[in-house]
Length: 314
Image: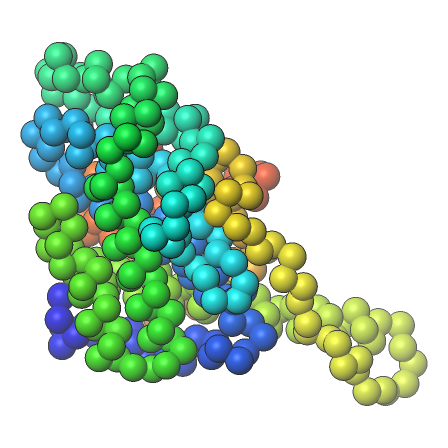
């Protein structure tokens, strides 16, 4: 997708809501954008790769794409790193650390889909019982997986650069390079979905900050008889949820991911419906636009996709 085909409204919304590098909200906000885009790309890219059941015949490639879908998210490191560094030898270990259960959830609908399609010889190759063997295979031959992580990082870096520098042409070059050739497919149409997802998170974060300021102001003046100047520290937030790539729990994957800040979502959800009316995302292999997906909140604060990925029968 060339920059001329991207709605200027989306670009303007990113620039209007994005914190700049010297803003105290910089790392906290862009960390959440990065996490959201990682979740989305690990859903969208496998969806495209497996539109045709014949793609599963190439097991070496398919295994690496499925492991990419199950890989851990990178939580970044303050204050400048938001994605995996594919040049770092420890990246693969960080991305694949203890993801066996997550990979099981990814493989189960794949095996079912192949079995329902009558591919009884191929479906057992994707059985969740072989997940540890699949991980060993991918660790030995990880070129495709590393390439997917690199494309993911390049797109996210381009998005952050757009928000901080405002250089639209540089964003177009970086985003296009990231998605021009993903496993032989041109996926530059996903840039628009990435912009919409970025806008959603930016607006949620801004709404959360405003809610925090209002609540803090009410708490500060509760029970006071006279007027007084507010405390200078009102509105400051501790960046207590910054974690690195291998510091999280087992379920940090494309299907079931811990919400970084569940309390700041409701107000923004109402606002984004006005700005981006068609940004609700459907789950993988659903009908219509692959950029749409839905999630529902669990009682423990996690987001769970309403349908498993790779679940559509062909």
